[in-house]
Image (cartoon, rainbow, N blue to C red; front, side, top):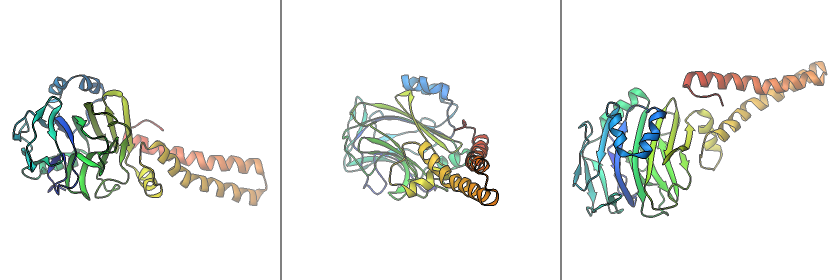
Length: 293
């Protein structure tokens, strides 16, 4: 939705406040190469190497309005009751004040919709490890029920939602949950990428990574199971099992009834489960450019 503003620290409606610190926000309409992520975890200066890929870059340095260094997206201005003070970790978001672009961030929508890729880089520290909602850290949304993407805090966990035709208007079926990111009040460097239907979140180090495939398997299982989505592997196993195990059983039963040859029906049972699943997984892998799972 191109009518949504870019927000930091709350929803436009003011009812999903986040208390914490943020020192930078980088946005790109490309998924950055994994080789660059190690450098990004070490130093903010490495963002300069990505200026050709950048869509917007905000640095929070104690001003009343925060300008995109590339002048592509609107200014971020204070909303709410108070203007917090600059701190060592970045600007302070108290829950009573937050930032919003003065106009809808329609260029952000157009660029991401055209490429179906993006990168979000930010450094944040929570001031309260028990915030829920999820409390909005960075969001591109119109209200609590309609968002293009959302980075938030749910207790000690980090939550990311992305709106697609499969995941719904709020992007929460399923959402990617990274556990224990906010178990402390220290700053954490976050790199979030999306490409080929895969969301990946890196926290502080390249090895600390969580991913979620926004494909029918995880989406279907998120409706059937109450658990939060930590990653997609268990969801894909259940999804394929629901489809192909009944198929294999039916083929084995049919062959047993017609031929009464148990060894051959067992072979058909196994092949009816495994071969179609491998064919589907191979097709998805070739289309999405990911590794075979």
